Length: 502
Image (cartoon, rainbow, N blue to C red; front, top):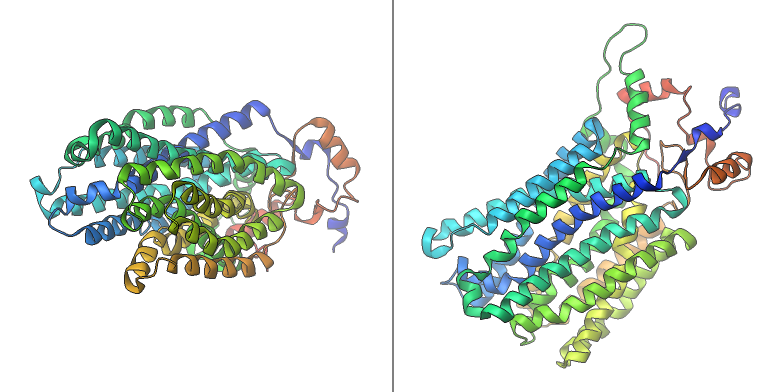
């Protein structure tokens, strides 16, 4: 440690005191986007058995389901590209602008699905256009979740980050449930014949006005203080002080090279958690209908109460992670997946409605502990200037390869083996991998984000933090971006910071 570093002292003016009004606007503006995204996922997931005859009427039911599940998986092919592009853009021009852009693209693509002609009009080209629109949705979604988690993490106070960020996933699952509820109401009112004829379009067309409202709210939110501070520091360091030459920006490959260890860790954790989550949300309606003999309406209605109950519990698991740590809560999620997987599918196999509810609840329990707490744990692996980009790479590649393809992989495994319990064994294997990865995850609960000054709820908390800075185990003075360290900001332009974990 140099003499200069030893003299660094945190001042009250260095600490970011969170403005409650700004935080609420930021949280509300991001929640509406996440809700909108998962509304579309829910609608598509619940309409798989209905849309099959619309786009592939000559195929048998198994092929129709695999095509729609494959189309759903195709959405995730474009997510890594969107994550890389929007992540890079979000670190350059700001989180708020990019999040507004991704929401507009996503809402427009969802609305366009509702306007698609079916096989009777365009033949096989109808199915091709459906895949194209899902790819557009995937591209925009690639920048949505990573940007939303980054944005709320940077707005939230350090000691309550898990609680505030968890509302994103609460909104996501409520959006999914809302999509399922809309589909269920239409199925009950119109009947399956009319749903296949034209009723399936209505839930997608609703995305038009809903998207316009969501974009309006998102345009009202402000950029985070952490990102503003980073942009100001980079503006000072944008030109070499002696030669006047512009320093080279860091692209996605540079970020991947500099942060490959935390990116790999984030990918493993995101893949494991989302495999279980997508098995619950996107595959269960199809599984109950195609494998367990429930009608399309019953397959939809059985999952909605479970999703709503799980969503309402999510803020409590977020608050729990702030108190006992992210790693402990994530371990609860991994362990409960391994323990509950077999009982869950045995309960569903019993065939009664109460046992099916129990089985779905046993699958939902670990999801409530894992997915929402990754939203606060993963952004804390990366410094502010590269956080959106790194999250875009890590999260979207993981979800594309493992999470989004989970329904298709599970359906294919069951088809190949003829054993419905294959899904339980698959989830148990995923849980073991997650548990190993959590072991290497640094604890971030209550700590300031890398590359950012501490964020607190009040001036009084800021004063206490400054007074106790030498004895606070959650405060790392050496990692704070003090104003006099613009030289470090210049260096980070040409050579990204070293990985912050492992």
